[in-house]
Image (cartoon, rainbow, N blue to C red; front, side, top):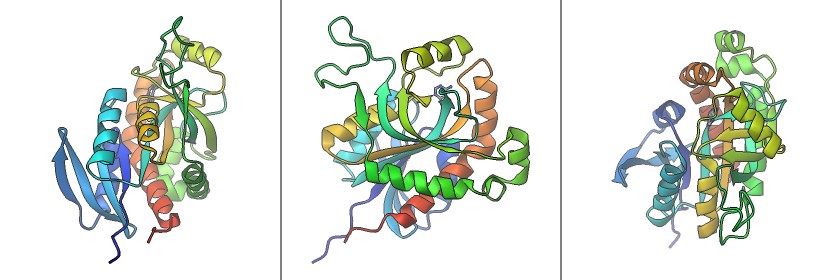
Length: 258
Ligand code: ADE
């Protein structure tokens, strides 16, 4: 007898980011575990588990562990927002992680800065095929920003020509909201495209379980002195539309495994 394919996990850190996805599921059913609702159902015909991780690395790690242990997901896809760090990464751009690192991990001098002790590495790779699929669908979605985000949002946020970037994403338990701090991070980690608060933790847990992980982030702010206001406005108006479009297109592209 054929088993149904294992579900894909779709995780977001904030409610706004996942609201549109949940609304698009025809058959979602919540399962309560670890103080969270794990929504089982289908999106684009694929079995999925959609969950709000909440914010920060520990919340992300707990969520990933439950998804892997209890729901047996075959891949974990994180969607959300990030602060742009590298010079060309602007509000409204999309960042697809190829590698993730914890910028607040520092057990030096026992271990090199950023290295996760006893793992022998600082960076955890995203699944290359998933990252490629996400970057492809994001580029398609961003080709017509007004169709995706609405003409008003394009005007308000100056999103006329958003771009897709691929590369290193830095995670830490800090909302980076001063130019001084983002400047320090840029100097220490010149390769890092964006900063957020969950991805590297989830990538580490997925690495432990040998399950593919990928993360796609819309840039909500520049992690500078204006980050707080930019972030709040962006999440409320733009982020969820971008997440929904990219995740749904990615699910359509990923052939179901039978
Ligand atoms: N997520 C979105 N913007 C962020 C920032 N500036 N710092 C950390 N996480 C973020």
